Image (cartoon, rainbow, N blue to C red; front, side, top):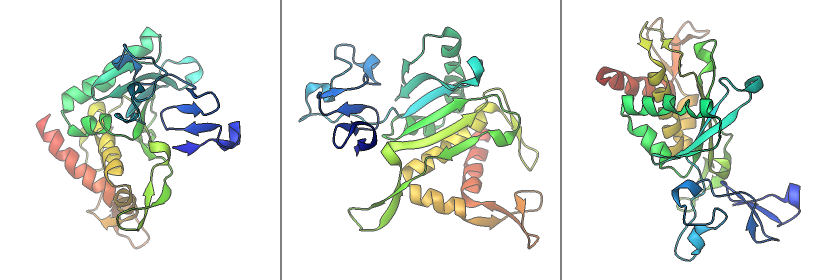
Amino acid sequence: MEKDNELKGIGNSLDFGARMYDSRLGRWLSVDPFRAKYPALSPYSFAANSPIIFIDHAGETIRLYSKRGTEGGQRVLIATISEGSVCYETKDMALRQQLHYYTYSKEYLKMTSFDELEASKTTFDITLIEAESIHDIGYSPNNPKIAVDGKTGETVPVFKAQYGGDTEWDPEYGGIDEQGNIHSPALMLGHETLHMRNANADLKDFINHRKTYLQVEEGFGTKIETGENVYNAEELRVIEEMNEVSKKT
């Protein structure tokens, strides 16, 4: 929970991650993002009106946006996805149909990373785009803040307001890696879900892997001033895992 003092004054508005709470009114300023799962409850209620017994989930886990076919290329929220349950956030049927890009990829790949992200307390965004190159596709983690681990006393990076960042993905754009292997759009999304899963599981470890560069064979990775070819360790471990997925699909 974070205070939103800049907009509403000190202590008047509290950010719970999924919703803003006005302490002066004792009311949420928006509806529960999981309202479709609980039609018997008011969408403005908290913890099923039993805060002593239940904890209200803070994140929507996966939010699917699109810039494909939208007016002016605007980013429009299509749906929120939690543990296989879908809540549509737009009435535009053409945009709703784009959800099948995500669901097909999940069913085709059968990767546990999709389920882990949907069940997470951290919210991750996936934005459907029209890519011009493979470099347009990728995961951008939310800038973390530093917190103190209550068990070890160690300072560790954590996601702000339980928001993990955004992956931009073109569901109609395949790619070819440095070794000439062809990857379907579904495999490319699976690749990015592994980055999101790794960041969610251990953000400090994820950051360290991204900062660590390992020597690789010629024609793979990036050549540096010493003449060596290197690739960051996070990409390498995800590539290795995706190679095993690719063999099964």
